[in-house]
Length: 148
Image (cartoon, rainbow, N blue to C red; front, top):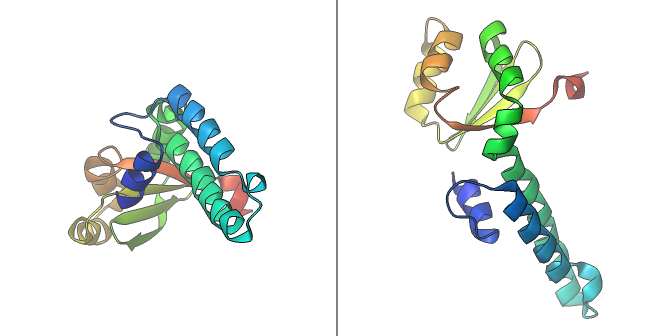
């Protein structure tokens, strides 16, 4: 959740993410912070860090935008319905779940208590469908083709 707030603040996004507005803001920030604009080495180094943050933030916000999630909804539903949980990692309110089809999703805001219930559930898939997969902000973190 901290990462989402940080990037939304960077791009001046309030509420839902609109891809058209996000792209416009992204282009403006990239022009403003492009390292080639600066002659001074310290400012150039600062601009390189800032431009990397801008690029990362843009890709992250695009991945959790409602339009992106809507366009990938059928594939997501297939993954959480037809495939089993193969692996999981939890760190600081972020749960990453890898399914047997090779797709991985990150779920933001999952508490340690809920994670404990998830891994101790009789069926992690059923518990996840009821309590995590459709209730938390998520994004696809890895494609099946990247695992091969």
